[in-house]
Length: 297
Image (cartoon, rainbow, N blue to C red; front, side, top):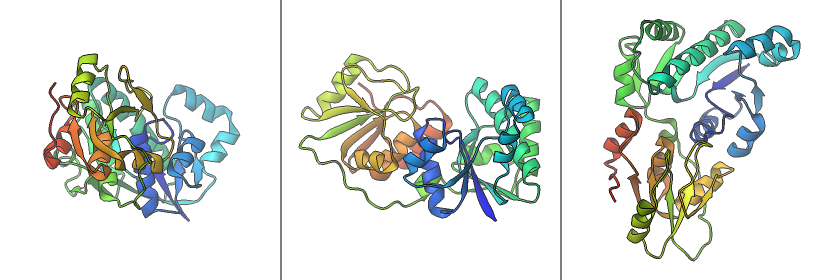
């Protein structure tokens, strides 16, 4: 009998893989639902049993109907507990939130169908308030299907409370999970990490450099969609240890993404700064909680 960890795993977003790595410390023998088992196992630096995502769109539904191998893979392990381990699965901007609500409600529906006796728990989740009648209906279904629900920030608690009054605040899973220390890379030059969602101007890069004239600026990509800052090298960490080592060796972090900032708070011995005005309530909540400065060139 096994626990199934569910989240946006195997999609290339290192924040989601960090959530998985943290969840595996609590559930070391769990089965993991991932789009890319090799990617997730490499980043988390361990082997684990996996199942594919259930159908969440027309193409995957057709695949389910035609492929007995796919159907068998979904139920290859007896699952007694389904744990959504964290992340803003029912959140996002107006357009992306509509898609997220549909996809993750469909995933939950399928998991309830595939494992009808399993207990379902939502943990360390992020929510934005539903803005349409259909979203409210989907969230009502989600909350009626789970036994417990915890959230990562006060904004999420306010959003979910009308649908699940017993919800409680638990923080982000990465924030709440200890990891063993990792030695920083051996280097003679101080490093400043920069993470950006949208293009960064050359004057901004120059202004950051001016704050640390002798440091090396290094762009860190937490997602394939992140911007490569101009004129500096960039890196996409391949493992959790590599990412932790980079942050542990940095003298400063300037970041936009939520988990790029969380890593700065958790591991960087220097200052962590929000690169731009927070792009969402989750970043604003993190900035307010830790009193992180905002960058202004």
